[in-house]
Amino acid sequence: VGKTSLITRFMYDSFDNTYQATIGIDFLSKTMYLEDRTIRLQLWDTAGQERFRSLIPSYIRDSAVAVIVFDVT
Image (cartoon, rainbow, N blue to C red):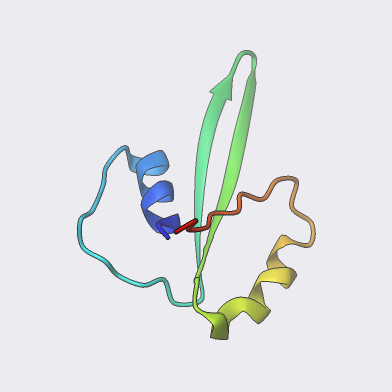
């Protein structure tokens, strides 16, 4: 679907044409400055394969936001 590509673009403003499947979950952190506040985003890039889906609920339990990416074709 392109979850990792979206995160790579957001984090590093770059795009990698090679495909490399995410195994399990990758964790990234980005600090942003909004008006008078400093915000640290913790990004979790989860694998899309069915065998890793059981891991996701334990990671999103206490999250404030979740972004769901899917293919409509």
